Structure formats: C-alpha cells, structure tokens
Image (cartoon, helix red, strand yellow):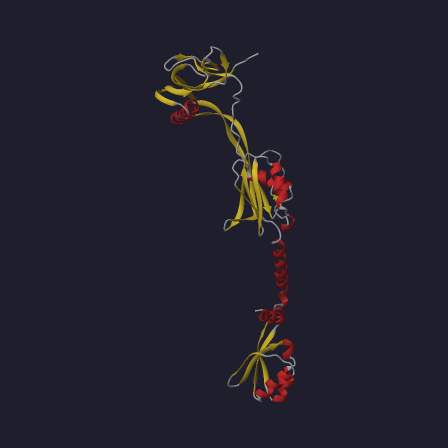
Length: 387
C-alpha cells in the first residue's frame, strides 16, 4: 500500500517497447539500475511501468538493444497537477481545506448535556463558558477535574457532573440534588387543630390526646389532638401531637364570566435572528435591550449529532388593552374553564361524597355554581407557647 502511494506521489509512466531484443533490453535496464514493474510480454513486445526519473535513462538501453519505446499513459500526482496547472487554485484550496479540517478536529464544536431536569442547558453552558469551555475550545486545554469542580461550585443544584471528550464533541452528564424532605421538629410541644368547619369523618391520633371523636362537629381553629399525655401518676407531659383528621364539609363556589371584558391583545410582533457559527455570534438585527417574550434556538444536526451551527430567534411582542365581546359559546367555555380550575384548587385532594352543578346565563354573563359535600384532610400543627 505504501509503495503504491509513493509511486502515485512521485509519478510514473506506463510504456511499451517493440522490435529489437527484449532480453538484452531488460538486462541493460537492470545493469543501469532502472527499476521496472507490471512487466509483461505480448505479441508486439513488452509492456512495463517505471518512474519518471528512470524513464529518462531508458533511451540508452533501448537504443543499444534495438527497441523502440512509447509512452502509453502517465500516472501520478505530478501529471495531475500539470494537467490542471491553470486551475492550481483548486489544488491549493483542497490543501487549505484539509489543513483547516485538521485544525478544526482539535477543537470542541458540539456540547451534549444529559441528566438535567430542573437545571437548564443554558445555565450549564454559561457555567462551562465561565470555566473556559465553549464552542471552539481546544481539546487539550480541557481539564475534566477542574471543569467539574468549577461548574458544581457555580451550580449548587448539581450533585454529580462528568465531562468526556469524544472527538470534537463534549459529553456532559449531570445529576441533580434531590430536595431534603421537611422533617418537623418533634422536640417542640404542639397541638393539631382543624383548618375548616365541618364534621369529623375520621380521627386517628398517633401522639397526644384526642379531644374530639368521630361524628362530632368542629370549627376551624379548634384542637383535634392536644399536645400532652396524661401519665399514670396523674401528671401531664407536653409532647408533639401527631394525628390524621378527615373532615366532612360543604364547599360551595361560583365562577362568573362576563360577556364584555378587557384583555391584552397582541398588536405587534417582531423577530430578531442571531446566527451562531462555530462559536461566533452574528446578529442580523440592531441591538435591543428589551427582554424577548419567546426565545427559540434550532441547532443543525447530522445523525443526531449537533453541529456548531445554530439559529436563535427572539420574538418580541407588543400588547395593548382592548375590550372584547364574547359570543355565547366562548362565554360558557370561559366560565367552565375557570370553574374546573377552581374545583381542582379546592377539591384536588379531597374525596367528593356528593355534589351538584348549576348554570345561570344572562345577557351579560354566565355563572357556574358548584355545591359539594367532600371529605378533606384538615389537620394543622399549632405550636404550644410555653414560658
């Protein structure tokens, strides 16, 4: 393989030799150090290949042996360059392109981030940039241990970060910290009080003394489980009361949608485009300090691998208050949406025993009323103040 590549670089000729004495011709070539290859004989003489330098010496051996030589073809880089010498710019362009690609392969041109849910890619990219790692950074300048320490110091929400360089791609894998569960301080004495009015559907006291029983009525703020324990000797010991209370109560609410209402309507929208090419930002607009309403970035990918070419579109909108008049269908849908949102907020974690819905429509509005009987977990810790 190397020999063929060397011959291509230096160039060679394929020739034919006819008439005369072929054996004497070959002996003279060997004696004069003329190297031949691809040698074979046909009915007219012999055919072979030799280098350009050796072919210039072959005439002496040919004349002494009575052979007539003729070049059949010219092969190799020197003949290709000579053939296209008027287009030498293409050759230099190819060389420069090869050198450019070789230099580009030593840099980072794509950064893949995985494992993050709460922390955004933008936060991680900004932290990487502050440590000196961005698009266009030389691979040899990246110290994985330093990058890991600096980024995790910058973003305390991360519990783990690893950096791997794969070709011109930087793979960043992170893990986020889980929030510590809130643990109540059980050393403080406290009661468990009801947060709503209603009837006790269930009451389970795990620590403390129950002051009410199942089926009794209770008002908001009343103590369900007191933070004390009566000992066998008749004394009382303060404790941190723990109890589960399920209160059955009536919940009624109303949602109204007006036909004529004032809302913000979009009056103007303008897009600002920024090109990101190999770490260079090229804005196609004048500088604008107004924060955008929407930011969309699209990165060019090949076979799922991101390339250092992306486009960011910033959308800025202008709104103005306008009074609109809604038709019957839109009015009912608006009231229904507000009703469902309110129901989810009030009864999302409740067990609904029964309920009814009423719709009242006038020329100016639509009202949706809900009346429910539900069981709600309504126990709240209330600290006992001691001196």
